[in-house]
Image (cartoon, rainbow, N blue to C red; front, side):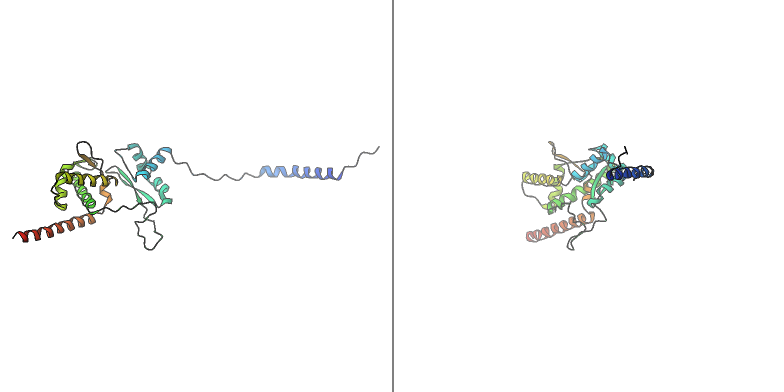
Length: 242
């Protein structure tokens, strides 16, 4: 009896298996494609520091020294993390302050926008009285720094500011109203991170951010303008008395 002739389908399967056996060694010799390199994850401590920085716009060493240290020792990496947002961190190590600024490379889209326009930065304009108080507080802060050195907390009382504010804004004739006006101004400036909350003894702390908040030339021009207005108001009054 003759053996069965292989079916055509069996021949195809045998041929395919033979080809696979020949190709297998060559495939085994081909090195696998390298996996794409992943950027190292941001350390959790640095991540918390950057989150805190973005939350308030600033971070003080006296309040959170560990987070401030993370920003100070890895400033370049923080700038890299903020780069897609067109932001950067600025460090005032002498006063123990880190704060967010608009990156120098940022360019506004619209022609009417200036370098201070940024989609993530909210601009808050100060009133004349707020600007005046800011200038007075900044002057007080710098004078105390010259006397006591950098990094020393500057504490003031509400009563010590009342006469200075009265020089420029005049007297309302009511001590209670003048104190209320000053307390309202201080509360408004507290939202800008330049003063602490007024305590039960009517005292507060000037925070180091006040040095960087406003341009000193603009503040000096503001004070000079107010002085000129005061002199102009005094002159007619003296002429009427004569």
